[in-house]
Length: 559
Ligand code: ADP
Ligand code: MG
Image (cartoon, rainbow, N blue to C red; front, top):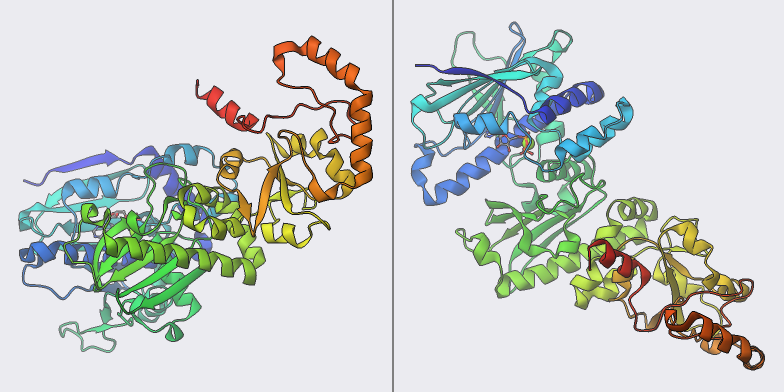
């Protein structure tokens, strides 16, 4: 018996569908990239599962995806012989969005099409992009290993709901038929489809086949491969164009926007592996969610093994996307095995260094793009010095700060910039932390620095005090929090300055004593300070005490 059910899309899916249809109209052809990308993922998964269960291949081990069309019926069909879906798979994967935080994110949308269309890049576009060109989508599928009678047919018009029925499907894998919308019939055309595939999917390792043109009427279809069909990272760098790297990124990262940079390396010697790492151009909306996808796509000798292998990069580089293909790991490597071991450790160290080098190169060669990177991911990179002590100097070099000589509250000043314009006799890097830019900018602590023309870094992100707890020096210069203790300006103070201060301290001894009596236990000490030029008094923090930011964080968490 065929059981048909009608099920509603999850609210988030409905919103995403609306958003997609209305905001991607200028780039409709990407639906094909997404469906082919899914077919390639399905082939990867089948190949991997078949390593331990060869019977899943059902005697058909030549994995491929086929794209055909019917101009009279206005349909395009995309068919793969990958892992396929069960009925339950189809209901969850084609009816819900699994990413946590999606609801919150979508509720913030502005309704402004232009802005929203940029936001969609943070989602990846995915299967639902089929509805950009189709007013009806029919998916028939059977998961490898299930009986022919356990196939599924999923159909929807991309509005509120979809139908699912159990059907017979002899061949495993997925077939998707798109019924093109009235204005989109032109897509059902051989040359058009070939050129779209060439443009977006040439890098796909799976053969993409189309019916040979000019076949005899009534004769069996002859299929020909229309893409290059070799895994992109296995090819020599010199033969890969920027647009191929970019399209490959979109496939691997499930991202709709362009990457900022990439680094493609083949390592030979004691360990053998190839890595292709990317810096995304935009933070995903769930960057700060605990369970957001992170990690690299792992291949072993060109066979896909797992997505989100987190063990190859530290957490503060969790935004890096890409592929690592190892010749040393075994094909049945598990997440547990990946936890540690000499091979993993040395790959992690090398890939961390590669990522940092890639960022350094970006900052040197393309400062504007690095500024974009910093805006999107700078906060995450600030976790680096605490997590990765060995690379703290390298990470510190990549940090950017607001400063009294910078461009307002924009974080644009590097430590190298700062050191490059240090005053004569200055051997410390001065900084001030606080709640907000306007607060620190007007702090009395800055008065003496303003007077002497010394630059001060202004740190107002929540993570900054914690970060500075792990940064003691850079390029041999110590960091000094100017709100702390008895500020010693060292050689920056002249003999005359010092004498003047001593005289003032003596002079005001009586006032200091009276203030001590009045303030009592509320303060640890009262001192005559040379920090100030205009303000009468300022609160300073003890050398060993917690900073104000940290105190507030601890208070907020009830400690
Ligand atoms: P993503 O590819 O980022 O996971 P998609 O929206 O493209 O998101 O696809 C959603 C899910 O639907 C996939 O993760 C997969 O589980 C399933 N799916 C889509 N297409 C196929 C296919 N051709 N074969 C098997 N499963 C598929
Ligand atoms: Mg996809």
